[in-house]
Image (cartoon, rainbow, N blue to C red; front, side, top):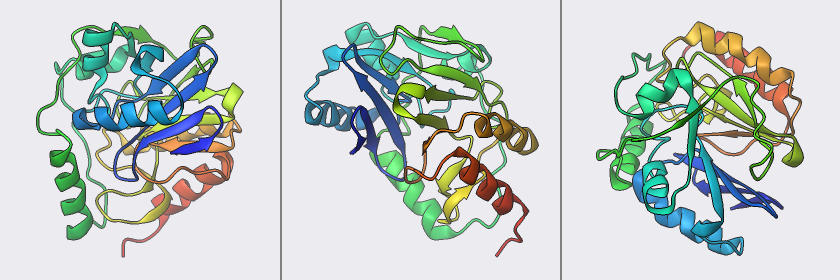
Length: 243
């Protein structure tokens, strides 16, 4: 789905990843689930591109619903995969999350999320065998979209946001959600399966300093009302009583 010229979503509100496109090629931010690879190819074709135009994958973190087809791109097409050093072991399958599910879980959204994940290869994760590590503040100016790495520890130790000033967009992974996969609640809110919920809320201060129009989560619909409003609503949701 084209969000604006040079900015596209692969997937849907259950699991999504993003394409940053310019005349240098394509940067893929997150790699969804393994069987979303065909959706990646379709989205590239809609943009007049092919997999040979992909210059890099940047992972917002190393969870299994974000690394899906990354190893396939690396192995079959030589695409480098970047991840924060503190999540590299998770992306390689060497460590597991110790996460909180969050509050107010409802049966139907849970069933929908896990059924979709299973249908897209979520039970057969192909972990990374080789990664390149990044850190907060790294500027990958040679890559399409000229992404900047913004450290967002909390959901996982090495969670990051990927900011493209060129596209006025920031891909936030699971730093926040706009559709909670376990409750069905819509709108900016804390994401579930978070290692350190308090740390994740603290990291939101990093987003308010960015002032991008597009806030692009790994789960939920793209948000185009700016980082500050998104963060305000996440903090509000974190304080709201469970219904």
